[in-house]
Image 1 (cartoon, helix red, strand yellow):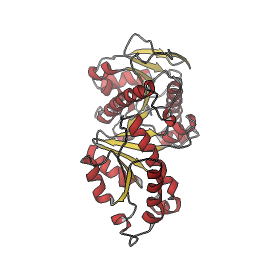
Image 2 (image 1 turned 90 degrees about the horizontal axis):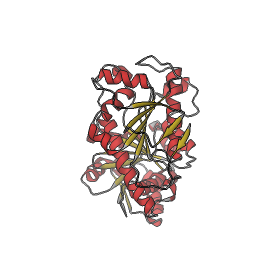
Image 3 (image 1 turned 180 degrees about the vertical axis):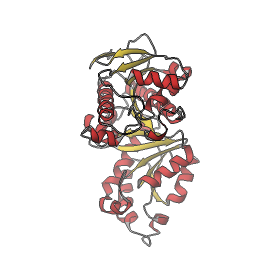
Image 4 (image 1 turned 45 degrees about the vertical axis):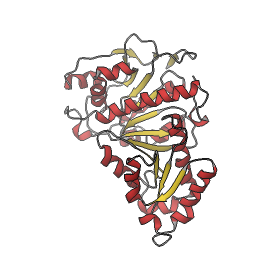
Length: 357
């Protein structure tokens, strides 16, 4: 893939790259439905990394006329005459809506992602929005990474990364991700709590324009440990991590009992929250915005968002997949890219979030 772009102009329209995800899932459908909104198409230009045939099938299913032009993926440009372009990988032959993990689905969905990351690193696109992939398909294709987050960190050479979720007024980062509850205590360190605090602070500045964001940290145990009565992780690990963050100039407080913290954050008392484990953070996210939650990988030199749901093989090809979360992922990618661009122009972008332009 070669890229043609102008490094000098910040006045050019934003270009958002969208990866199609697993061809057997709902990715093609939610992309077509989301970009079927002419108001969304007006806000940016788009390059879809995927299979034109599958997107046309999804458009027929949604009773939408194709609103894009097809171009081979080998040569991309920001200067296409249309708002939406499909970078087509027609060398892959994948039956429409297989509704299950396959080797070829894993191979092509992996290729969509790696090419989109390269395009973002080269400045060809301003953000990457990823439709859901199947980790099982990637495994069948012998992918060197289990999923998006690990792939992004490796390709971007980012030693630190974290998952952040946006759900209405709530912005939440995770200290641990896909860890069994019984294993968390063995992997729970001051560093794994400090890192998402630091990365969330940077993201709230660079992507949301907050000068001095207020971050709250949840406790791990009931009642945030109740002074050691219900576990000592708050005293041994979480409080020292908060102290480190405060010494680094981060406006950070806690640990707070998780059963009340998210209500306070949703009401605007805090700009961001760090949760200690997956379900502690994801339950309030899904309660607040089940159909519209967005996942953001923070700590990268590129901007990446995605819908906060999976491939939904069980409903793929039935025309009933909701595009709300994909639309929100695209909208947030646009808004965050605008803030990021302004901070680059002002020379204010944090080092971890810089890439070549």
